[in-house]
Image 1: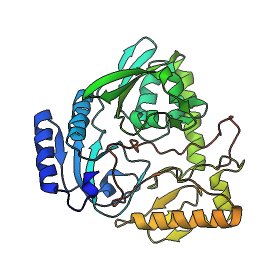
Image 2: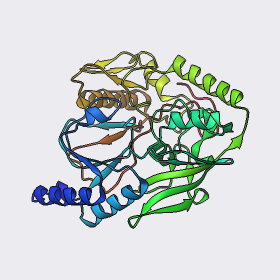
Image 3: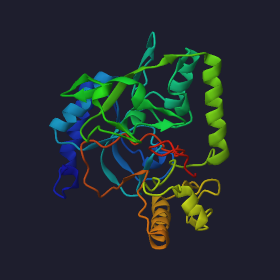
Image 4: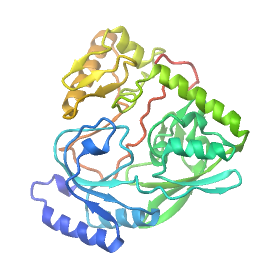
Length: 342
């Protein structure tokens, strides 16, 4: 994109952005840092943060930025992002204000992309609607859950998604949920698509039984994952060819508690890297992650893939990436439903 060209005119871009934001009534901020916007609490300065409040605003905004050749990334709650410490010269499109209200119609519920996923699970459960209660402990927003087909404890959001609302040519468009490929922690949405919301079709059940299942899932998470720590969920994917989970592999190498500056391998779950201190740095977390990858490669012959999204300041920006908002911390089962080691 143009922002990565040394000759790019940032004054012209900034002027264009101010005009677009004013025309559409979208709040535009400068001077924010990723350390304020991500669950790891690390990351450098951001040129612009734009925060549309309605789906129509968001659709119009990305269309106008695309037309102007302005690079942007969509960010939800930032619970699955490691942004580096440099200056990020692109627009961050914050979806956290796309909250709105839930719209219930029988077994269906319409929800905007910025709605909290844990909050949604609670709200639909109170209405006696079942099908997503296993997702209640996953931090993040609905948009991110859709993007990566969030799943846990026998539930996946893709299986209950009837309609997805996306931005198309400046408008809100609806696509059938069954036209999307919902794979294990992955969907077929492509770069260039901004997810705005969805309609889910759930099943009626007793609210007390739904609450009991949610409580059970919560207790299992609290027993096996770091609670209250600054993390981005599981840092690495489970190796597809291994029956041993990544957390167990790292643990057996004796790396629980390993530290690099302000980053630490969680003593609770070895596939979690947590950050500490007011001046925590992304470079520490990345250095620790790369050390883990190198040791696993050397000692186990396994190439670990990142679960978190790495956002680099000097990396050419696309016009959209995944929302980067759901911490993918539920690795209890693989594609066939077999139990995985944490």
